[in-house]
Image (tube, rainbow, N blue to C red; front, side):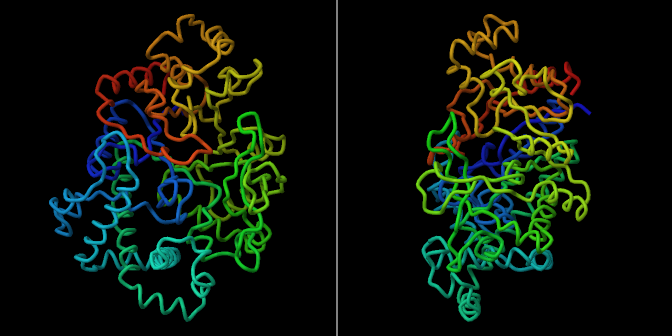
Length: 490
């Protein structure tokens, strides 16, 4: 079935109090998706973010970001007041997120709401049902607060090593803080599932995003060090990244701890099964980031300042995905298979049956056999104009070298393409008209926005994940999207 959807992170939604959340504006966005004839809404990871504000570096692979909690229902329930919210500084720009102000204000108002909250059966049921991850996460965050936000490898040794006496003492001393974090997760889950049900009821499925790696400073690594390549002091031995290439002379040093795949295999991949099973309670489809890493992964010695020195190591391969299907059944997964792919990766993708990704911004920088060119597609793929790591299409077009401009105009038969203020729509048309079963377009491209609306610039810190939608998603744009969708049978 030919379908299409829009990529827009939760934090980029318009709303009050400084960041997109599960507010009325989110429900309005769902209605516009329906009116535009879309069937999918793709979001970025929903986890709580730390230094750098990246949704791909979360304090937990299971927890939700408290910033996304809509404060309106907390007011309606009498847990906080509008005056208390208005007295806090969430930033003064509607088009940009000030994460520093968000950190100092959002937790303050949520802690106040928790102080006035009276536990009930629904809350107790949520805590009990999710205790297998929630207990570690809430305790982790509370102890992190006790250590002034320091990474867990810098905590006092009894806490770092989870010594029984220290942990029991922390549970008693930090009881209020622990319950506050549990309270946040309760409201996050309640509001997210309400929004998801509304989307589903309106014919919109939500595509989530799961990073292959977890952050080093996370409840996942602290509570499950045996799952990772750590030494006896719980320090990483080797970390993740990508080798030097045309785009990055020093490669990309992500710094995430690498999995001990031998341990995961010995334990029947149970940690991963729990992770994937839980993820599908949040989303209808899931994009797995860095799919190649399951075939082989780039391993960099811990302590390096760049990724120049490293080696490729074998991952679990197709055995992992076969085990996943046997344990959990068929799951609707999109494989992020971008970048330089080896024959073994392509074989793993084909055997898995998962659709891979095609990105039009990658289609014109090599010869005519480039497999990102639409005429090379098969139906089992998902086509994008660009991803969260790309420039917007308008911003990208502004920097395309003349020889590639000539290639694009020849391919499209549009000599005036690069003179058009809405040239990005020709790339949308190219994606929509392709044979790909699914077409996902970042909202910025439908709005013909430049790089002022770029989501992320890889290998940079600061200024990313901050763009927010204002009032540009008008009924005129909705109708134009709907017509394009109808025209190409999506």
